Image (cartoon, rainbow, N blue to C red):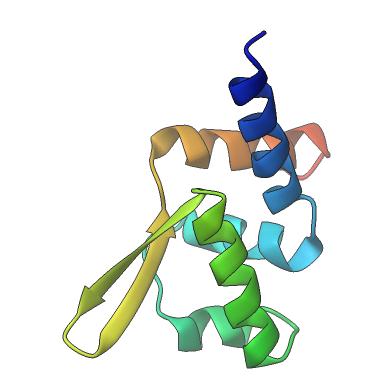
Length: 94
């Protein structure tokens, strides 16, 4: 296996390996959300939520879109949604 691919897989798994980040990913399976909606659904300080969003962006698990002054977050693609669904299913959640 290519070392770059293995390193990327580790980054992705780290991105998902924290409860608040996984909760954000599960939320975003339902579509694009703004920071207020995400913060309301995640039991953490809004500053911590912003940190988790930055981590997920850096891991390329989510994308950010600006519309004027508003910011919206969404899963990167369908493969990311499938990965999140598979992880939750594997854990017995769906």
